[in-house]
Image (tube, rainbow, N blue to C red; front, side, top):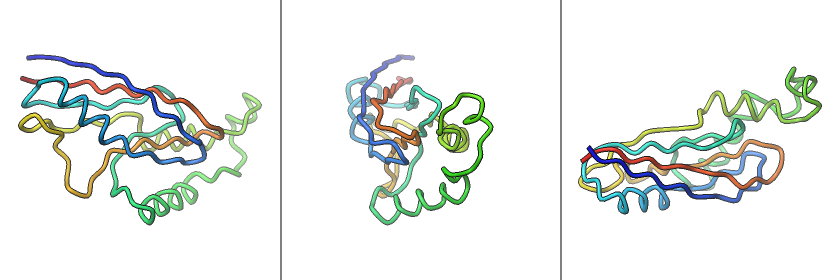
Length: 139
């Protein structure tokens, strides 16, 4: 079994900024030379999420609206009171979405659907430089 790891950075605007990172993950899979296995995509931080969706304006807007309903930015979060900041909602959204996902590698390619893109969601209350690691395992 082989292993390959690649880290890349993504600049974000914060406030539920959603970025398509499928090309970067596909590139890591191609560079790995692994034909059959799995790729794990993991973001460093507690105010981001890694998930999939059809990356188009309507779907991105729907995701943002759903997250605004589930964890609104303007609630009185205990995290904000404890740390004197205003991003308690971002930590909660990250916990709900999760900071990593795994996908199959099939015939040396990322195994996702035609309308399924891998996205980084930055929930923090300010722009960030995010570090994403793609780890490819297989043969």
